[in-house]
Length: 258
Ligand code: BV8
Image: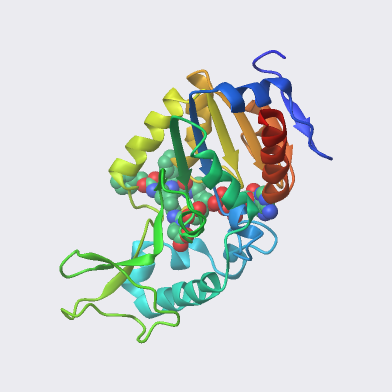
């Protein structure tokens, strides 16, 4: 198969020999995930038909301006999401990716998700590009701490020092954490195999990572329920639910390796 040919799998996934060979032999792998990997855990996505943004406009809630204008409203949205996520469990897709980090010498999971489900599934070689909904930052001291109250005892919450707390997540117009972004780009540049899983690939700069990987010679695979702007440029695209496809791929690898 030529490097740029696109293999579309829309029904029962059949895995190309090239993909299986790379999964068995590649030395370096990087994976970008988005809200779609957590959808089967019950966490609403952002832009799908049942997406979070349908109910709320991003500029109303996920921006520093919105928080400065109405910290209570923004915290009510995050408190609602935290309570919902607290009831969710990692799904098979999260567990397969946690298992894969043990298969590759050079591996990085790059998530846009703030729900913490990858870590709960056992992933450790990972970066959270958009922060974590279970961390808060004091606006007076700048201290970052974990906070698992669901529901929050007070809205908006305050630091013991009296300072207002904000969610330790990246809002629109805010820069991404420098070290996490550096690691993500470096992993994309050296990856032999790059997966983009469960992301609409519209939010920058995360959405550029699959393109960077492709330009640097990686074999790029997309697993997503719907087509995205990167679908035409990837080497293989699996259109469907990530959990079952990742489970099937993991079982295929186990069968071949045994
Ligand atoms: C920044 C907050 C600069 C946390 C979020 C060009 C270049 C650079 C920037 C920009 C640019 N153009 C515009 C910008 C600005 C902006 C941006 O990208 N806007 C977009 C909308 C055009 N980017 C920014 O503002 C970023 N900051 O660039 O700063 C800067 C630099 C220096 C100094 C100052 C400033 C910040 C971006 C982060 C914003 N924060 N969230 C939170 O509350 O969650 S973004 C939000 O979208 C989430 O974090 C989410 O992770 C992210 C991406 O969404 P997805 O994860 O892809 O989710 P989505 O619902 O969209 O898609 C899910 C997919 O799953 C769907 O395709 C669906 O088909 C699929 N699916 C569903 N179920 C399943 C499934 N797939 C498989 N299986 C299933 N079961």
